[in-house]
Length: 155
Image (tube, rainbow, N blue to C red; front, side, top):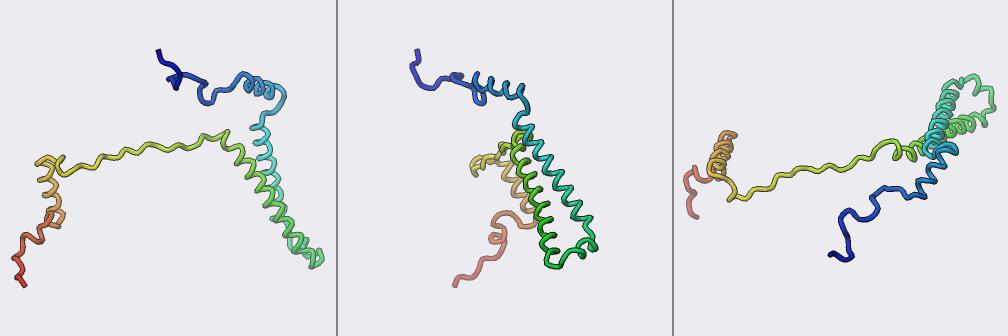
């Protein structure tokens, strides 16, 4: 009879909620909006506000800007651009927070790698086919350049 130590199938399963955690989640669901719903609502709200700010900026005419004092023109335009950019940034932040609950994370996939074969693992037929293929490609096979020529003079 085994004593102590790790046993297959023992313990709480990964990701399993405790009774208390499940009770809290159920109470939150019946009481109102869940955190994910709030994150998505905030994301949509800031995205809509950013679109309205960008539309207002695009509709800004040169005549309206010209009516302002010259020292205020640049400050006004800069404030409007910062406002639109800040709203976009808030929408992005909310989207980033909610993304892990909405979209599954990518996981690594196993790559099948063929084992490198030793020279002794090749059959005679495979070696002959390999040499013939190399000769057909034009390099004449392994070592053909040195074997087919006349020997060099000895110095």
